[in-house]
Amino acid sequence: MKEVDAYLQALAKFKDERYPAQTAWDEIGALGGYTPRLNGLHKDLPTFCIKVPAGCGKTLLATQVLGLIYKTILKERVFASRNRVPRSSVAEILVPCFLR
Image 1 (cartoon, one colour):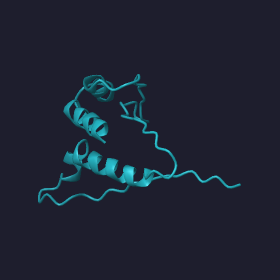
Image 2 (cartoon, one colour; image 1 turned 120 degrees about the horizontal axis):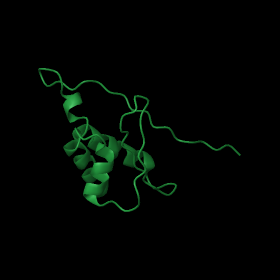
Image 3 (tube, rainbow, N blue to C red; image 1 turned 90 degrees about the vertical axis):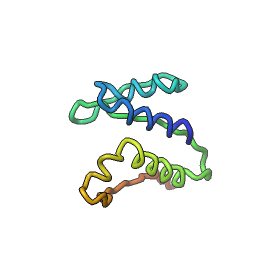
């Protein structure tokens, strides 16, 4: 979680860069290469992958990462209203199901 938090903090720091995801990745010195991705509007799309074995709390880990996302890169969006009441957001976690 420390690496994820460091990446998200760097993303928030470099949000005005042309490619903040790549800049943040380089800033924290993450292992492995970064593969740039663009969203449907051709803007930088930050992505990362966490490999977790079966039965080791992937859903719990996902909820923790979502909390970090809302506290870092979505902080301004979440508290954008005047009275500092958080805006509503929805997250969907998809889990593959393999039937035998």
